[in-house]
Length: 285
Image (tube, rainbow, N blue to C red):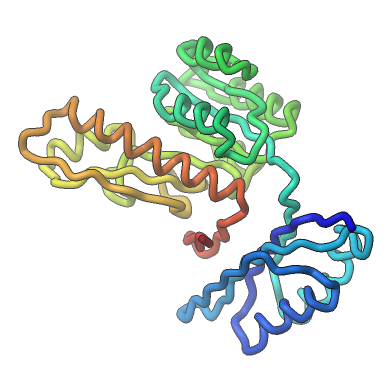
């Protein structure tokens, strides 16, 4: 027997018998459920499920599974995706001149924490080149002209296509992506924002927080949409500060929080633990 592991993600209108229908479908194909999690949103009337299972490839392969599950999905009005645990998504990291998130992701990648192929690093500054070269990751410098960003974005999109990129990670990439760019990767661009959204949007949130005298600062990771800093939030965290903390202290503490929320978001996406709907996310454990 050649066993292969898959992840099935489902979103559909909530109704009785959904869990039983999915479990029976898998049982009839001699699949072994390794992990299952579900969530109901009562206000929207939606049901969400993540099922990780192993199946004998000699008895039912991926193509046959998709073909046999499709009628069930139509009957139950399911949006669904099937992902192989063996496949490693290809990732590109965009960065500007703040390198702490990039360094953290590279360390986690080298340590085997991120189930992906890190294909390239793209930057509008040269600062990240030594770090990319040390980790033997192709680096591409794409300078951005403020008056016209289109040539840079066209070059970047060509690189993403050339490398077969599945996920774009903005690791403190200090440029606003155009709607045209975002349309190429819906729910496949993850950004880290140095604030606990929706508070303090924009370019200098730590400075705004310091001026306001807040006692908590935070960071948020989210999917990028056309609306700046308003995409579905994936993860957030906060750090307590006091009246003794100066601007440099906020920046230092904020960098630590940014690294955590970005790495968690990237890992959850790569492990297919996120379902997005109505500008919200469901994160399966």
